[in-house]
Amino acid sequence: MSGFQTNNTVIKWIEHRMPIFSFLDHSVGSGYPSPKNLSYFWNFGSLAGITLVIMIITGILLAMQYTAHVDHAFESVERIMRDVNYGWLIRYIHMNGAHFFFIVVYIHIFRGLYYGSYKAPRELLWMLGVVILLLMMATAFMGYVLPWGQMSFWGAKVITNLFSAIPFFGDSIVVWLWGGFSVDNPTLNRFFALHYLLPFVIVGVVILHIWALHRFGSNNPIGIDTKGPQDTIPFHPYYTVKDAFGLGAFLVVFSAVVFYLPNYMGHADNYIPANPLSTPAHIVPEWYFLPFYAILRAITFDVGIPFTGVVIIEAKLGGVIAMFGSIALLFVLPWLDRSPVRSGRFRPIFRLFFVLLLIDVVLLGFAGAKPAEGLWLLIAQVSTAYYFLHFLVVLPLLSVFETPKPLPTSISEPVLKGGGGAMAGAPAKPMEKA
Image (cartoon, rainbow, N blue to C red; front, side, top):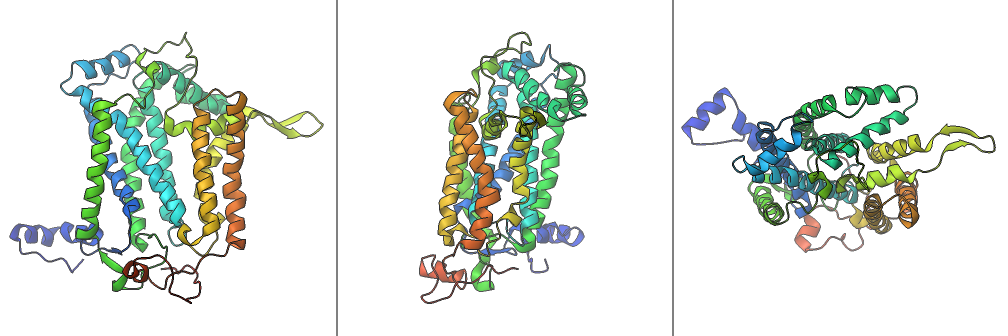
């Protein structure tokens, strides 16, 4: 931090008493060396952070006008849209911001999967990212309940009822979540309180995530460690400008949706007040939950001892285990993929299976949006089987049998040569650790 220099008297005075500027320079400024080959896929981390700030600010403004009561919640949202100055804009930014938050984070996650950002020594960095994803899911689910429309009410009822599948304690957990014996005012109140609180918990985990990132620095498209100053450039101004360009492109698309397609990613039934006596024809969660919803519904059979009729795991519990297991797998991913090469750029067979995983997740999303019957149920079951097969079987086998392409000797080599391959005749090298 001692490398920070300034001629500004005010900044010097503050810096002497609280070295905030040298800290910022060390963290995101010219004092933070970054690999010189980062692509625009590395923009999505900063975009996620900016989107989180947007969500918190608009959420606080909405909370000033929202009424967390089953008799008034729906009307208070309509009042925000119609009577509060620019309330429609704040709500549309917040509502669509949730969708874009997940878009950005999912791209960020799949970029990490392709380039091996979960591998040593960044395992904890990856695991903190999965924790952020779980917190986002919980926050988004509770936020979807707050407008108290038909999908809000029935979504809360269906999802919270899943916990009743847990042996012995399930019913007690459901009653605790509801605050009573049905989804009612206590449920709405505690969901509102938690929806307000959890974003600040996310901020705390994001700080830990960034802390872990700065311990070993960013991964890069070729997945090898920097060898010295020749492989790095200062984060500022090079990547701050690149992030600013990415932010501008993001805001253009985001603004187009907010102003021209604000309800495109929502569900029409949520503009109908919640009615416990009228079940929607098809209860569908938001699109970012659909792959996990498909996995949940794909388990339609009991697991037991053959020929005895003894059931060990009922279908409902099996679906819950599969759904949460699909996320739990991400925590242990660094130990499932043992290949010494990080980047998929040098792993041709891995690249093929990565594309299959992308297709599989998209199919799960489509299956989750359809009724759990017929062809779509079969697609969900096959896609669920492949999802677990990919992480539990394919990746460990590739770690043993795949022969990666030769790695470059340094980051500078492909950057200066304009290509990503190794020098002619250079032998393949294992992933180096910081």
